[in-house]
Length: 358
Image (cartoon, rainbow, N blue to C red):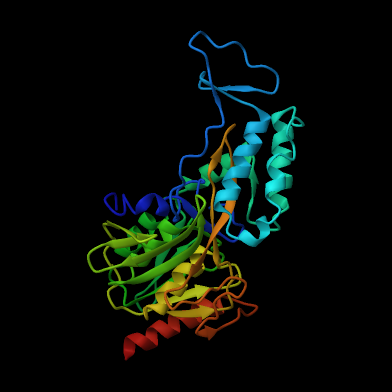
């Protein structure tokens, strides 16, 4: 695993997909293009020891000073260059200097950034305080997000709670190795609200010999952006705006054994991307209820003061070309839960058993 996708482009490490839109590119490391270095908007300190910062300023690394105005403008520029819905930026220029000379503190600047982002009418684009930014970083390091067990009939059951952990793919790989003797697999994505595209891509490669994973189209660094991720028999190929990057892939640990994926209304974003990609490549059957329907991706570039701003920057499309945003994925077999037990799991196990007997 350590050698897998070390270079799946800064993109794959920067984009994060969740139903809440938060857990998404630090944002951290999840599957979109790596952000260009953000404008410094800072003033270099003089050679002599810097004087204490004036009110409304903070010293960064002893060499740069940040003012509330610069703080606000950095967020404005990041949104301006990366926001997906360009038609909502018609009046964006008026926000650039709306608060010039009016922001006395950093708290003022953060409130102004909030108001500015809210004006876009996109619940997935918003300012993240230091507390929220830290919480996301903590989720990145979460472990034990994948569980597994062998069911009757030698059916391997794997539940992935989230793709927002950097350990999701490696834990899924370990689960599949532990269940290598299974006749088939149930992959449970119910309640999985999404996470990093890179983690979902790595999991995808554990189930396929080859196939297209997803296509992203949007806006990045002031330019139209497109990215296609494909798993071949030998490697992962990521094409960003015509530029090809290759990297190592995970081995297919499931062969051609039957696989059923369980979904529900809380299966969202990266989870929908994975289940849709597996189905479009003819690898699985989906069972459960209609999924959430989040077909857009966010990046979360860092801001000063340990904060960040999450920005919707791209739509994603399944290998077959469909967008599931606002629609969701309809299972191959719609099965609702009953009052007792887990009817969906029982039906999935029965489906695997029938496939094995053929």
